Length: 337
Ligand code: AHM
Ligand code: MG
Image (cartoon, rainbow, N blue to C red; front, side, top):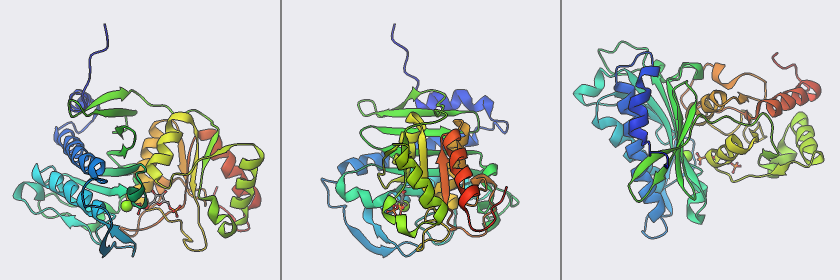
């Protein structure tokens, strides 16, 4: 007899007992994100058909051009999270400041959600995979008023849940609440995310490395030595330019993803709160590792601002350790132990 289909909603409800606050609010929050992901997925799939492509004309808070679909995904996530009153505020890569949710029932809610609504947005126009990344924290400000900046500036180790959606050849939602990592594939015929990858574990090592090697001459010496070594070892280079997609491959097939410091981005390009922390939580829960190029564990970094960037080295544990050895050997400045 074929296995019975387990939908995302069913899985979330059944897993509620794993979660020590277990009030049902987190369950509802994850379901809201699942609904937003389906709506965004529909638009991503229609992007070639409708006039939603192209630069929106605005710039995001980091000064990069924002495309229409980014804004659409941003609006839908905020809308879905506003509706049911479990989330008191959001912070998004596309908004300069955090947004307290105003509905009466939202004000006293216990959670904040941070997200990159559409990661890899430069790939939309050319029909290459993009993604959504989210991260959930329990608020630390008193829950009898609006949320505060401190609720968003928590270390990654404080995450209650994190996940991503990859809009690829199929649409897959992967998430963790700190009890392992599970993946759900959207079945378009029934419009449900169905459990397809139970308890994902990353291979201890792998054949793939993923880095924008075009910046080679802008890397520090230790990074250039490491990249040379990857090539000497005949590792296979894969770089999609969507962090979600590059890490998704590595999660299943083993490997390492790096976005180091460059001359243009001395602290790396990717955002600590919207990209690095959630992907690190998932990676560690799957048995992988995630550090910056100063060898600090990503999830131990104390954020000081919402749009803070971080360099990142993430993937199979043995490969991250090998990379660490290169930094220790070739770095000009002393690194943290
Ligand atoms: P985005 O969130 O604005 O799309 O930017 C993040 C993306 C990542 O998905 C990807 O890893 C990186 O930027 C690619 O940057 P580059 O083109 O510098 O290699
Ligand atoms: Mg983005």
